[in-house]
Image (cartoon, rainbow, N blue to C red; front, side, top):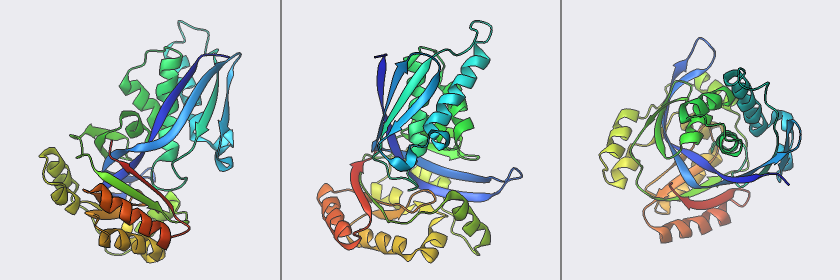
Length: 297
């Protein structure tokens, strides 16, 4: 057995998400405040003889190595290694097996695939003692996916560009969080297409939200500034998202809103008992939904 390293891969939510418009490269410019949760997958990396990367995942839907972001991250790390150290080494000659224990639901707007990819990038740097700095790791992540650089840094951050340009923000107040993911899938492409075809969109004030967090204002004030441009078009197409949002806010949440491009809805509570009561209600009312409770990281 080779050297083994186990890494947590934390889920993320978007405290604020504004889509500014389509870019010349086909992507959209965004401004968003992102936040990690104390809940996620477990990624285990193990050195193995020979060259190449293999994957094992307890979710059969993600077991296809060719399409898994964790394998893409490993290959991108190898590419960066060979580029940086080609004068010192003949090339990457390490083998590695990746095991992923999934807890973050798939296609949920919670960054599960990006979190796994980030865990692989950070883990390979430690496992193979390559000594790359955070900026280099984030550049590798950006080549894998827009949310991967944030998943490498974690905590609270302002993300701009495609989501890869990060500015640290003072930590969001530690809060109780309930996440409810209905049994529907919204692809990122579908979500952006819905924006392009929609009329008047809601644009949260990201600057005001960032300022309220930095000034450590009351949690009720901060949550009052939260919003997601994707939410209204998503609710129009999938009313259950709005039903979950309404149920959680009527159950005492300071704020409930969709994360990312959906369909997960998260709710911020200032009282754990209220959260647990809301969770019981959500599980009873939305029987096909996946629910979990946690805290902000």
